[in-house]
Length: 281
Ligand code: PDD
Image 1: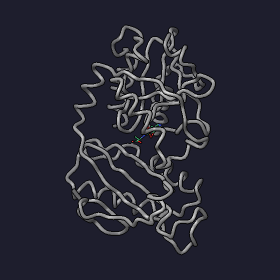
Image 2 (image 1 turned 120 degrees about the horizontal axis):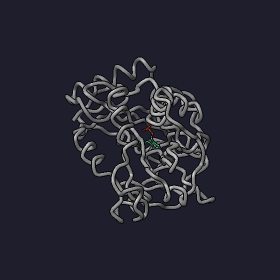
Image 3 (image 1 turned 60 degrees about the horizontal axis):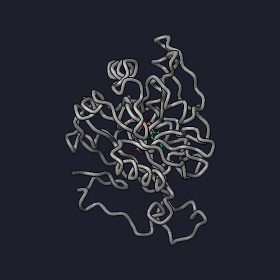
């Protein structure tokens, strides 16, 4: 496997970063995961725009232009012969002796780009059965709109979910409201058929899949409410699903062991998944 590391394409097993990289010492960096379907990078411009925003929020310089990043991503896909899977882009504040304060501007950010092949039929098979989610308290900081590589609460939540047999963790805020998944956005469809997902502010990541699905929902004239919903409301929902670059639209059939709807993927979630496939991917 080949990775891009600060200007060079190298074998992944030989690719190294400094022990003084601020990503390694402070998780001082941001990332993007972009889905690749039949050779195309899905919603690439939106991913690159979000990357630029995350960098600006943390006052990290853009390591290369968006145009250069597109070329690098394609080169990494090409060198690894990947048609379906993901591109991973990570930028950190660079290499400097450990000090919480930013290094001088002469320290350039570090950029790595890797790619991974995934069989799209795997996700389709999971979607036909639907997945279970398990809830855990949302222990994250107050700026999770920034796609930071500091993911320890997400890692712990996902691990706990996995240990209970669930596919994803839903993070519950201090008010008992569902924030989002550990690596996805959370959605429900209530008994009157309204699609509900949390509004964007600093408490969730503005998912690219979420944004594109909202475009689809409004183009198809479906009812959408962007607002918080409680775990209690979710347990009484007709359908539930999650969205993310690694899952697309994935039906949820159980939350903490409670069956949602009929305990099978909901018709609306499956329909949205197929429209997403046809229109966006
Ligand atoms: N995660 N919320 C969180 C906390 C996420 O980490 C992600 C994506 C999303 C969905 O965003 P998008 O639709 O842009 O993928 C929501 C990526 C896939 C990851 O960490 O692997």
